[in-house]
Length: 377
Image (cartoon, rainbow, N blue to C red; front, top):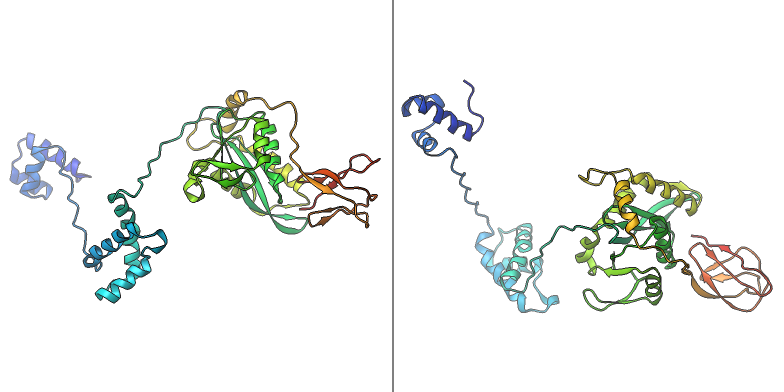
C-alpha cells in the first residue's frame, strides 16, 4: 500500500483501518506513528494546526525597548528634528554599548516599528483601499512620461502625452518635444480620436501646465488657460494628491505609459521627424485595441465600442491652443521665437500678436496672408 500523501490522508487511512477492526498497536506498526497520532486521528478527521515555532531571539531584542522609547519621544518633536536610523544606531552604541548590533538590524526594526508606534499613539493613519469600478464613458486619466527617440540621427528626449479611458482601457498617445502648448494640443488630439469627452472626472497630477498652486489636499489654483480650455470642452478635472501618495489614484495611465514605453519604444525608434513618429504611434494605438487587459474576457476594442457612444459630444467650435506672442520681423528679416530664429526671410513690419503652437509659429504682416513657420524640437 502506498504511503499517505498528507496528514489528512494519513488520518483517513487510520480511521478506515480502525473501522475494519485493527487495534491501536497494529495501526501504530502499519503507519509508523505513535499512540497520540492514532488517538488524534480517531477523535477528529482534521489534524491539529501545526504550532508555530517561537521566533528565535536576536541580538537586538535587549535594545528594542530603548528604540521604542526614542521613537515615542519623536511623536512630540518637530518633523525635521526626529531621530534618524543613523542617530538611533549611534546612541545604542555610544550610550548602551550595543557593539553586537549591526546597522541593517536597526534599520529594519525602525522601518517596521515607527508606523506602528504612530498608530498606537493615534497620530498615524491606517490606509485602506477599495477596488475601483468604472462606469462606461465616465472617467479618464491623463499623464506625461519621457521617452527617448533618434530624431534625424540624434538621440533626443521627448515627452509622451497619454489619455486613458478608465472603463475600456482605450489609450491615446502623442509625442512632443517640449513646450506648455503640448498639454492642450495633446488633449485636442486625444479627444478627437476618442470622439468625445468623459462625462465624469478626468484625473491629473499637479503639472504646472494646469496647476499654478496647490492650496490643499484636493483644492487647486489653476492656470487660466487650462481653466478656459476645460470649460470649453466640459472637462471635470480632479487632481491627485501631491507626490508619491497620489500616484496610485491614476495608476491606470501610469502603468499605460510604462507599457507603451516597453512595447513600442524598445529598441529606440529612428525617425526623421516627430510627425513620422506620431504617425507610427497612431498605428500602435489601433493595434493595442486588440489586446486583453488582465483577466477580461474581451479585448479593449469591444469595451471601447460600448463606451464611445456614452461620451459627451465635442464642441462645434475649436479652441486656440497656441500661446499668443508678440512677434516682429527684425532688421535681418527674421522672426525670433524664444531662442529660435526662423530660417525664412520676411519683410520687416510692426509687432503683431500671433499664436505659437507646438509645431508652428504663425507670423502675420500687413498686406501679407498668414504664413506658418515650422518649429524645431
